Image 1 (cartoon, rainbow over the protein chains, first blue to last red):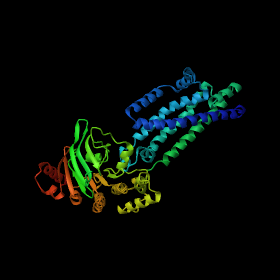
Image 2: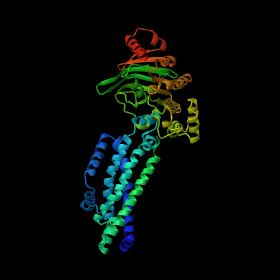
Image 3: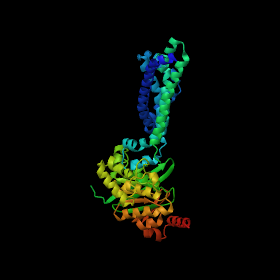
Image 4: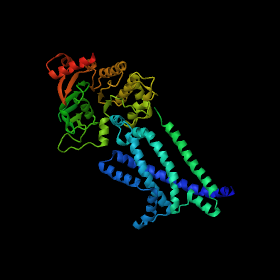
Length: 213
Length: 261
């Protein structure tokens, strides 16, 4: 019990790194993924093709391989990223491919008549997206997106394998000192569950907020 | 330049979907204030023609002009012309209203917001101006108590009247109505037709694709009968329904009568 309590400050430091990684990855993956998702839905066939190759390729790789590839592989092309940056880059690439698909699916779920009605009153493409398509698509987009955020929080534990002291590695370090794995793991598990529980609660709230019929 | 009194001029328009020719050398002119109904069997090309007029469907050949501006392309010269870009098309479409068979109201916006969207974001009116115009139109279509209702809270007839208000609030030069009562329960059709009739009396230039023959007869200046991608006849309502010299028109009209009973 004492070990568990004394380990908490270390775990909180690790937790803050986990949260930083998660927030950065979610932010970049969402911004890039939504933009590319719009391109894959409405772009020319070449653009669609290029993005499709990217998503199929990335989704066919285990995340851990992607993390190692960015951290150990990029230096070969002159990109020396420190482990935190490499972790964020690798997870962002991975998540982006999911957000692209979520975006495409959400947009395509909207009846084409909405686009036509928006055209018929003279809205240009950008305004059709902003005022008609996105507000409708967000309902379909949110549930998988929140899942994705939760996955990122959990999946970020893999970055401990390139030496980023996140919650996972912080736990390992404490255990390495105390040789009492169980209490530390229990505290760690509870933290992970709390993060993800609060995310799914947020998800349910958001979903009901955007329900209008 | 020669003065033209026609608001809309359609010349030699052709459209195919793959090998299927849907519009075959269509020529049609509509003057300001005219109401033209297009009738014909399904698959005759009437909805496609209507959709070409605001480029929801691209026409392959020929020319469609509104007030001497080519709608879908940068010029009428078919050898050099390019498709219009999104900005140009949007600006042209803002002057052509369209009402759809399945309404296509924006489900996340209230009735008032549906009508206001174009006024705010295309016409760039202030909120108070847009509110005033939109609520004025909703009152004219008999929905003064439904401003705050979402489309899902309205009946089909009410939704379609919002659809009409959304289109006419933009003060279009031309209004296109695509089978606007076909998806409605019979008892809701009349309330929508009444609104259209009022618009016609107020001088709105309209082209309507319709299966409501008695309404078409009542409200139109001309009735265009299409079959197989061609315009077969283009006459006033009386001639359309009472002269018997065109076999295809006769066949179509007698088929319609049989279906009604």
